[in-house]
Image (cartoon, rainbow, N blue to C red; front, side, top):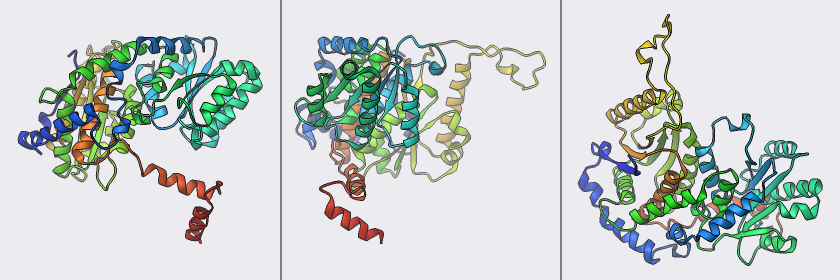
Length: 444
């Protein structure tokens, strides 16, 4: 099982092969739009050929920038949405589950600016006081509220502790090439910078310096990550039944047409929790518009079988599952025998924990399919950089295909701006006077 695969036989009780293949012409049209830039949102397609167009020199520069943080106890990556989730997903998937409790081999990567939690920010500042730390600040504009607040606070702390000149050496800005508040500040202060390309939206940016620099700081092989994406780019470039991105996009749209409005991404490896969070943003922000779109949800099994499992098994039949199954585990552990056998587990003594997990996975899939929940399976050979790079690109290209099949622009997010306008009005931001009056009238 060396390649990522998509298996959709367990949806055929809900939709047949003909219903799925009916979407193949639209998928082929979508691939052409993505390749030639002729579809909606074509000014945000820089990610499509990004893996093969990323020069080795840039990857070397990113690795050099990561090494510049050697000696730091922590590096704080400041960003929100795609400027946070991609790096968090990969680092979590590759990290020791208990790394925070063990001696560090290099800087620990922390995250800020992904929320406006006062306690979170206070506790982060308390952790960093008296510590040598660096900052990676990620923002095209430099004015997005959540990361801008975090950067203002952490920059002040860093300059207080290290001095302004030394702090400038410990800050890397990933921002617009020419314009914006962060670009202006980086130029004035002499920060090391990387560019967020105008034609790459945040949720598609994990394979740019936005994701690659924090991943490199965490000690992982970004060249292998990009190599996996390059292989997936090549294998999904042409339309056809062998294209796993086409199979996934066509199947989920057939299920949507059949009334399955919610897709639950399932994993049986706790290291994939944040990968699911990244996936939810990718699909939710890309497809949820024009009163259309599959709702993306996720669960961690077997943990959530003891909470959400009941609803999935017996609740409203508007759902389908996409299960990521990981082939090889990084470690081996067998269940021991016990002379008293009070827990009744001697029947699985000598088996690997992963074998038990795989049987739980298989048994759950059978139960859910029997209960009317269609299942797709995505097989991942192992959790390493190359496989994750392939999985990232697979979901990205499938998202573009699926969005075009659905008939929406997969690359804008007009609804995201609504909360910002209300927040700015409530905070009396200059320039929002009329909005402030209107929203105050609603509150009376």
